[in-house]
Image 1: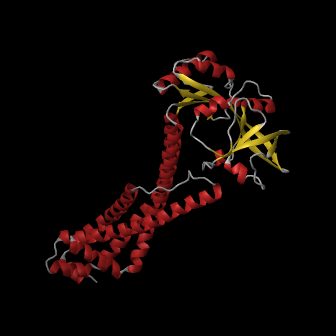
Image 2 (image 1 turned 60 degrees about the vertical axis):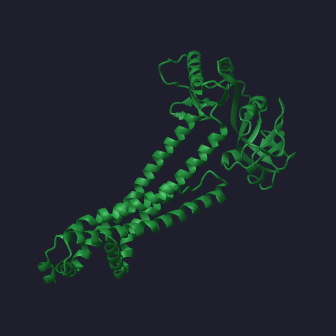
Image 3 (image 1 turned 90 degrees about the horizontal axis):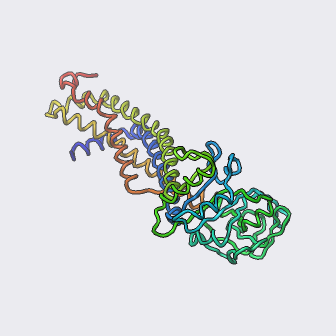
Length: 405
């Protein structure tokens, strides 16, 4: 095997230009696959970390309008979420805390500059207990119970979204009313969270005139209670008051645990990743065809050489292994170069996302199995592409091969 390997390496060295041109298809395909998989894996890891911080004892209820499920779908639904739902959930066994959450798009003005923001309205005494430890205040303080005309803002809102930085004590005008900034959040790494503006639910209701509708409901489950069982109870009770059939999927709302949300995200990423990798794999097929073509040409060019080897005692299996090693090496070297290019592309995309989008969620992850898998796959693509030419070479008869012109 050692002799086969060195013979294959020497043969590739003799045809450097052709070898490089043959490997182009392989390393483009492997680079694309590695870059896409690393970014997908990194994003999945980052989201998993966020859910672990959030905790497994949380349940989220969102509105549903047709196929749309989001915090903004509640108002589009035929039966939006309301304070009535909050009061219902508070009475369900296993529930420790319930908090309504309202989101509205409003114009915000600071020092003459106006921008549209999604404003979040929370019930501080409940919301802060449910999500305790999931975020930190960098400057100033958090809300106290029933505070009005006060704001807590995200890192980007304070430092990037307006031309002039916002400090604790600064005044923002929202829908014609003045609000004082009492706290600035630490940078989270998620652009939507870092560009947040948070006020009390009562303050947001006064601004918008919205008295009952809410965008989302957050639930914290009691210690020792089964989260999935509590979620099922919530779903059944909400179906009853909305006149929906218990045996059918909810039509106007969705109840999800943290694990279910994470699973939904993971499934979406897997589908997107599979499609992208499938597209990138086309170049691997092209690369494999290129290797096959090169090996067939090599068989024709080296017919006399094969005849000489057979004349001095080389067996069919020896010739087969030499050509298979050559094809495998073409794939392996192409794969190694592809991994280096894929690593550079992944890290480059991560850097651009961090600098331009200000997000730490877009990360490139390169686990060992991705590298080993890419190298193994590229070797087998090369070897499989070389099977037919190698077999043809091994079947040549010494006398005919020596006479070949």
